[in-house]
Length: 275
Picture: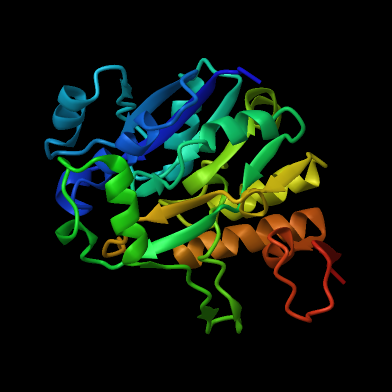
């Protein structure tokens, strides 16, 4: 059970663009009972004082600055994984706070049996969350306050008419994978531009490889997303075409809702053959 967990977080201009959400993420990690872990912070070329402030506040964090791959979230996560020394890699976004003190302990236990984990319940705060808390608060008080101003979304994506799945975490924003499984599968596909669908493609590839997984919400694990104005999602259409091309090459469609157990009477299984 006492395996080492490497926590990989990619960040850029967090102080300026996300109201320093990263500090609260790291405080929630420090609060964990399970201490056999390391934090690897991948700096995506930010120009504000995020890294300086974080280094002053948290002394034992490994900071990696790749230089290349700017904005390529999949590639940056891969860089963090290459610098990891743990048995398990836990990918966490820089705006995603742990809600309980035993999350890392549960992940350690679950990865005895499962190759990868994701699908924690993902609560979304008010966009003005930073007005309700401060860094001088205890993290337990901070989490209580954040939960009071958060909701668990269950929205409809109007482009496809199905649930948008924002109530779950994907493998990249809060998901764990055994290091040997990560190495075996080659990590995130770096050909996706920026961010978007690189998470879905990796989950599809992991499922294609018949790796065992567990949905974290089934184990009572949840996180809080510190909501912010989204970056320009201009890469989505290109990434969607790339994802569809990958499905065509493998001859199967991947139905991500069935991965999370969200059955919408569509009659599909996790994979269906392309006819």
